[in-house]
Length: 207
Image 1 (tube, helix red, strand yellow):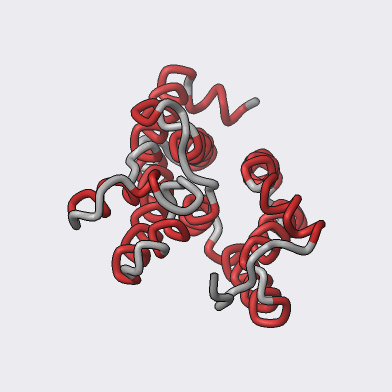
Image 2 (spheres, one colour; image 1 turned 90 degrees about the vertical axis):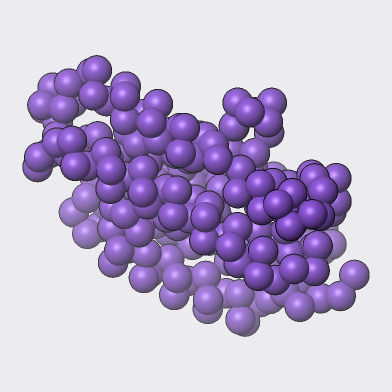
């Protein structure tokens, strides 16, 4: 509570709203339309994230979407932290991170139908704890290369993140990522069902 008092509710609310505004920028939709490919929501899964953008066959656009969706989380966190010092700065950054994630998942401009959150999760983690991001990356890469399921790798890495943060002495950040991981898992419910029944697509799988 001391951090909340130090930061002040007006600044916390401003950080949350500012983070939401940044997080709600639909890079996948903007980039594909700019490239003359139409509405990315009309193809594949209908998602605005990098994985669905890749279904257009434009790897560069997919990479740009991934980068944009990640960096909007990082920028939101780092900008908010500049308006406070010490504990108050961290509280503002946490509020902005939550806002950015909610903005990506539920953008008001798109009827609250956004992406699944993996890239933005990574970007927020980069801004708040680069060391924890290394653990996330190690888990994701290990599972992705051995089991060939991108979704399973992301789910496992996101679940491990709050544990790693708590164990490394960052309980407030761990609590934020516990909430983000729960939302990420909820958005991946269709993937989880496909993993359980053996129909989830593998990395590199055709069709």
